Length: 142
Image 1 (cartoon, helix red, strand yellow):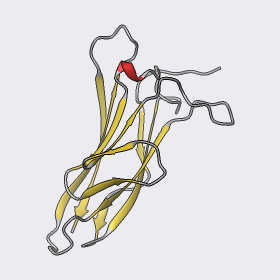
Image 2 (image 1 turned 45 degrees about the vertical axis):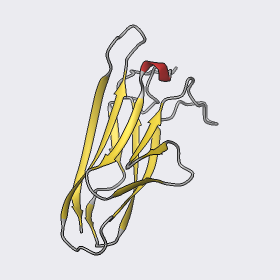
Image 3 (image 1 turned 60 degrees about the vertical axis):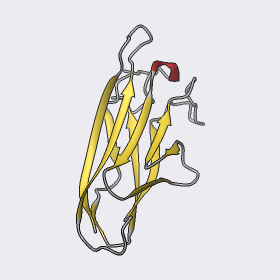
Image 4 (image 1 turned 45 degrees about the horizontal axis):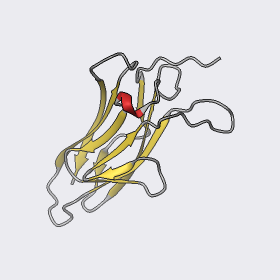
C-alpha cells in the first residue's frame, strides 16, 4: 500500500555549505519527499508543484544529467503530470543535484552564503492557493 501526504515533510541536504575556498566549488544534493519519503502528491504540475533551489551569492549550476532545469542562478524542478515508477515499484522522492561555485575568484573576501530550497505545492486540485515549505543551509563563500 502506498501512503502519500502531499506535504513536503522531508527536505534534506547531503552536506552543509561550510567554507568554500576562493575560486572553489562544492557539490550538493537535496532530497524532497513527503513524510513517508514518497514523491509529493498530487503529481499534476497544473496544481503548481515546483521545487526551486537558489543561493544568495555565488553561482548555482544544475549537475549535468540530473533532473530539473537551470533558470538563471536557480535550479528548478516541476512535478510531472504522472509519477515516475522506478523498478522497485515505489514512488521515490525527488533528488536535485547542483554545484555552488565562487563567482569572484579575484576577491578573497568572505561572504555569508545561504542556499534555500522552496517547495511550492497544493494538496489537491480544489485548493485555490499554493503553500510553500522552505529549508536553508548557510556557510561562507570566499
